[in-house]
Image 1: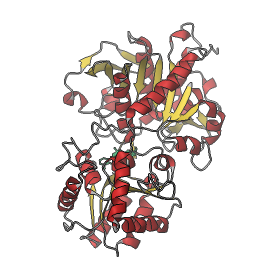
Image 2: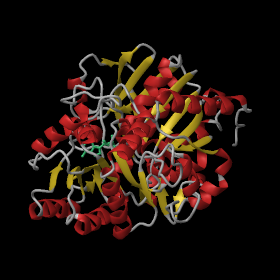
Image 3: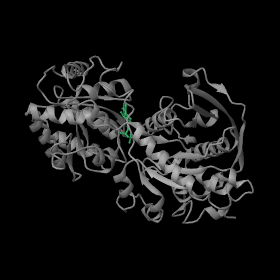
Image 4: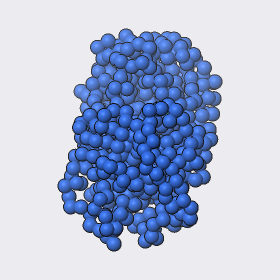
Length: 489
Ligand code: ADP
C-alpha cells in the first residue's frame, strides 16, 4: 500500500511530545511491513543542517492564503528504503526557535502557518509521482487537509484524491481561531457551518478534520470512548458521537530499538529482567547526577513530562507535600507552565535531600530517569495514550498512574489481575488519592519478592509498533474496500 503521513512534528527531525514519536515509528514500521510510506512535515530551524543529505524536490509550493499568496518549496530525504520524508520549506512560517510557541505564548500566525502546511500536504499528496492511496493526518495542524480532499471530490478529477484518516492525539488542542481566519482556506463558505468547520462562531481546525476525514482514530481504546462524552470531548463530543462509526481507538506503540535497557547508548549500565544489577547501578548514577544521597534502599520516584494541567501536576505537588515525611526520593524532568516550574524548584529547595528537578527538555536524561527510578508517577487528568508509562514498564520501573485513557489500557493493577499486575492505579483525581497510591508503592517496595514479580510482568509487557501498524493498515484496507466517496457538488 502507498501511505502518506502528515504531521507537524516527526522524530528525529522535530519533537515536542508523543506525536513526533508516534509518526516517526509508525512510518518506519509500515515500511518494514512492506508498505511504501511518505511522511510530510515542516522544515524547522536547523533541520537541514542536521540532515545535510536532504535534496530539493523541484516541486514549487505556491498557494493563495486568504488575501495573500505564500510560496515555498519541498525537500526530501530517504532515511531508509521505502520511506521518504518530505519537508515543507517556508522560512517565514517555519524557521523559528519553537514549533508552535515561544515563552509559553502561541505564535500569533499559527492559523496561517498550519493552513499553509495543510495546503502543502494536499498538494504533495496529489502531485507526487507515486500517489498515495491513503493520506493519514495527525492533529489539528494537518486536519484541514481533510476538507481540501473532500473539496477535491467535487472537482472533475475527484477520483484521484486519496482517502483520508485523521488521528486525534489530544482533544485539548484544537487549533481554534477567529472566524475571519477561515478565509485562509480560500474555500466556499458552505464549509463554515456547525456541521463543519465552525465552532461557536470560530474556526476550528480539528473539528474540520473530524467532520470531513473518511476515518477517525485516536491513540487508545479507552480514550476513543472517553472523547464521545462531555467530560473528555472538549466540546466536540456531539460530533464524535455522530461520527462514532468511523472512530477507532488504536494504542500507540513503543520504539523498542530506542527504548530498551540492553543496547542503549543513553544508559550507563545495561540490564535485563534476569539481571537487574545494572538497574541498581543506574539508580546510584541518577542519584549522583541529581545531587541526591546515594542510598540503595530508598525508593526513588521519577516523573518526566510537560508541566501542564493535563499531566496532573497540581495533584502531584499536593501528594508529594503529603508524602515527603516518608523515606522516599523524587526526581523530575519537565518544562511547561512557569507556575509549575517554580513550584517544583521551590519543593526541591525545601527538601534538598529528597527532591531534585531539571527544568528543560533532555531526551538522554529521560532514559536515565526511566532506568534509574523504582517508580514512575503519571497522575494525568486525562491521557490520550501516554508513552512514558509504557517506557517505564520496559525499564522495570513500576508506573503509578491515574486510570484514564491510555494509562488505563496499558497498566495492570493488582486489583484487576493478580497474576499480571505491573503497576499501581488510582481513579479519583485528587492529591489524597495519589498519596494513597504512593503509599501502596512504598508498601510494594518493602516486599522485594512482590516488587520483583511486578517488575517481571512490567518488563514482559509488549507494545511493539508492529501491532499498532497492523491495526492501522487493517483500518485503511477496510476503508479502501468500501465504495469510493461520491462527488458531492
Ligand atoms: P504528551 O505527548 O502528552 O507530551 P506522551 O507521554 O505521549 O505525552 O509523550 C511525551 C514524550 O515526550 C515522551 O517521549 C517523553 O519522554 C517526552 N518528554 C516529555 N517531556 C520531556 C522532557 N522534559 N525531556 C525529555 N523528554 C520529554
